[in-house]
Amino acid sequence: MADQDREALLQALRARALPAWFDDAKLGVLPHWGPSAVPAWAEPIGNFHEVAKAHGWEYWFRHDAYPEWYWNTIRIEDSPARAWHEETFGKDFAYERFGPMFDEATQRFRPEAWAQLFADAGVRYVVLVSKHHDGWTLWPSATPNPFIPGWHATRDLVGELGAAVRARGLRYGLYYSGGLDWTFEPGPIRDVPSLVKCIPQSAQYLAYANAHWRELIARYAPCVMWNDIGYPREADLVQLFADYYAAVPDGVVNDRFVFGKQPHLDFNTPEYSASGEAYPRKWELTRGLGLAFGYNRNETPAHTLSLPELVHLLCDVVSKNGNLLLGVGPLPDGSIPALQRERLLGLGRWLAACGEAIYGTRPWRRAAGVTSDGTPVRFTRKGSALYALVLGPPSTGRLEIEGLPIAPSTRVTRLAENDPGSPAFALRIDPAPAA
Image (cartoon, rainbow, N blue to C red; front, side, top):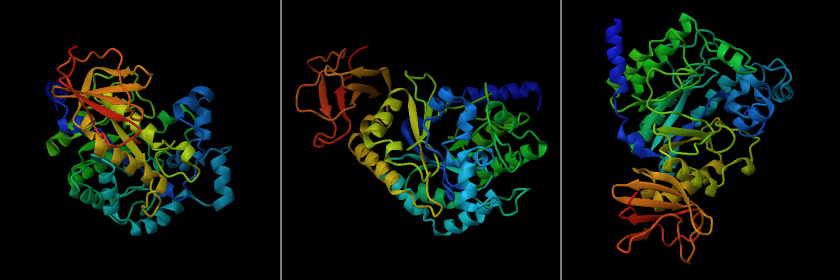
C-alpha cells in the first residue's frame, strides 16, 4: 500500500466516532479461563501497582499474585509458586500436562449458566479470554500451535459462549494475548526489560497471531478487539483494524497493541488503577473481583471487593467517563466460585434499582462531590437530568450536597426508595442545575 493511501486509511480510522453502545454499556466481564485454573495458585500479596512501587518489579514477578501467570512464576527458581508446584505435583511435572486436565474438565461447562449469571448481574458485554499468555486457545483453531500438539480446547468454547451471551441480548468481545505467548518465547519474565524481550518478534509468530485475530473476527465477529501486552513490531495494525471495522462496523479496539503511541485506538485500559478525574477519551478500568483475574485457591473474602466497594467503584468509574470490566475466574469445569457469584448478583440487584443513573449516562461538568455529612457523591447525566450517586446508605433525614444549588422548581426523585440497605442510592434531579 502506498504511503499516501495508508495515511488516508489511518486518518479515516482516527476520525471514526466511538460506537454509542460501548459508551452506554458501562459494565462488562472478562472471564479468565484456561489450564492455569487447574493449579489455581498464586500468592495474594496485593495490588500489583502498590507491590511493584513498594518492592520493585523483580519482587512482583517472583511473588506474582496473578494465578494466570503461574507458568511464568514457576520458572523462577526461588519463587514460592515453584516450591509449591514441586511439592504438590513433583519436580518433573510440566505445565503442559495441565492442558488435557483442563480440557477434560471443560466438557462439563454450561455456557448458558454463565450467560444467565452475567445478565442477572447487569452486565452489558462479555469479553472472553480466547488465548492467554500460556498460548492455550479456547477454540480449535485452524492455525494450531506449532510447538505443543493439541494445545487447544476440543470444544469451541469461544463460539458456544458467544451464542449463549448473544441469546440474552449481551454484546460479545474477545481478548487475545498478542504480545506474550510462552510457547514461542518461554522467558521467564523477571522484570520489565525481560517482559519486553519476551514479546515474540519472529515472522512465524506474527503470521500466527495475525491468523488467529483474523479467524476470531471471521468466525465470531467480536464487538471488542481486546489485545494484551503488545504485538509484533512489524504488524500492519492499520490494515488489521480497517479490516476489522469492515467486518464489525460497530466494533471497538483497545490500546494494548503497542507500548507507547498506538496508531489508532478507541479506548484506554488502565488495570487496577482508576482515574482521579474524568478522562476526555473513553476508558475502561479492568480488574478482578479479587487481586487477580483467574481463579486463585488462596484468595478469601478479605481479598475480594465487598458489595459496597464494588458498587462504589462502578459509580466512580462511570462518573469519570469510564466502563468497568470485571475479571471473573472460573474453575476448570466452568463453575464460578460462590463468592464471585454472590458479588455479581448483588451488583445486579443494585443495578436493577439504580441502573437508570448508570447505563447510557455521560459525565457531568464535575465527577465528584460530597454531602454535608461527608458522604462521597458521584455525578452522571442523561439528557436534561442530573444523577447524584450518594456512596452511602439512604437516610431518612435531610440530604444536602455541597455546592449543588437546587432551584425551587427542580424535581428530585430518589431511585430505589424502598431499599434502606442499599450500599449507595441515586437521586434524579430534573432539570440539571446550570453550570
